[in-house]
Image (cartoon, rainbow, N blue to C red; front, side, top):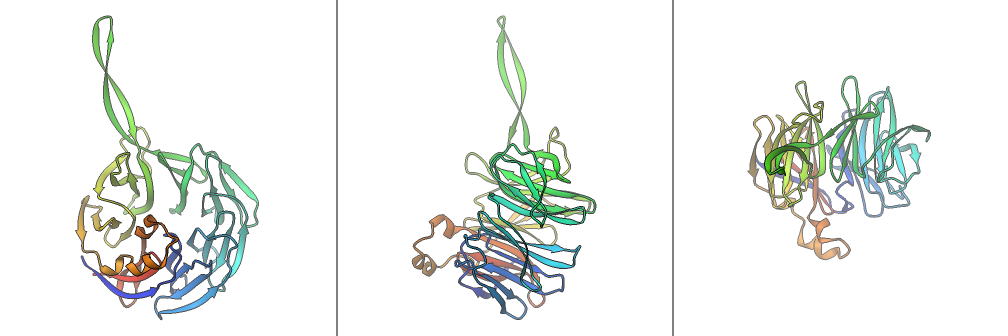
Length: 347
């Protein structure tokens, strides 16, 4: 497998790794939508290589992340833009605001439940709050953890929320708690009683810190693919069965990495992972990894470093990417590093 640089899309995106989305719309157009540092929203046509529209002053506060949702109920594409205290939902067809919600939160997503979309808001140890598009509180879901990220997906019958926190990853099915995912292992302690010693078996749990999770459906197997960092700064990819109970050994596999920035699924049930100076392809069927060559265009340039004194060194190192299928270039990555966004093909 080889990566090829196709072309540069922009050099002025906001540095946040969650400041862009790319998708094929319901009318088969191929979009890249990204945020600039001044909070303007840029909609870009990846087929014709041109900006479609620019929305200025979209939020008063800095936009922290954006997400795309396919609204198959109303046959439209939705864009969710979030700042620290406000969420806006846009109709991609005309770039009009469908809904606004002014609330303080740490992470947010939309969830489709009973043929209707809702906001799902998470913050610290507060309940997960579910609001409708009119701003009415629909439900509170009990939560005992400080959630760092929340996302949703649907299968044929159910709606799921996945939450990541400092200690574990949890799932919620149809707006109720479902599973907590943790790795189980056995240890033994020696105790003394009346001069005799005995060995006592103990069950312990090792979670590490979840960094990102991707939902993957392979045949009839529903998987959660988790990037995780342990207490010793070791990075792993863990593959979980969504439906296994916490009493069983849930961990299917654990693949060690030298670092982690981002990951995405590509063709034939493979996972592409960027970490530090390495790019690895993980074959999920065979549970093995293969390192591939990294392109020069995938690194942040020294010129970007010199021209931006306000950004942290850690922010400069981080990259993010998503997979698309381009009509001319085939399977590709929209690769963002610093302010640059490039199109990289996979051969």
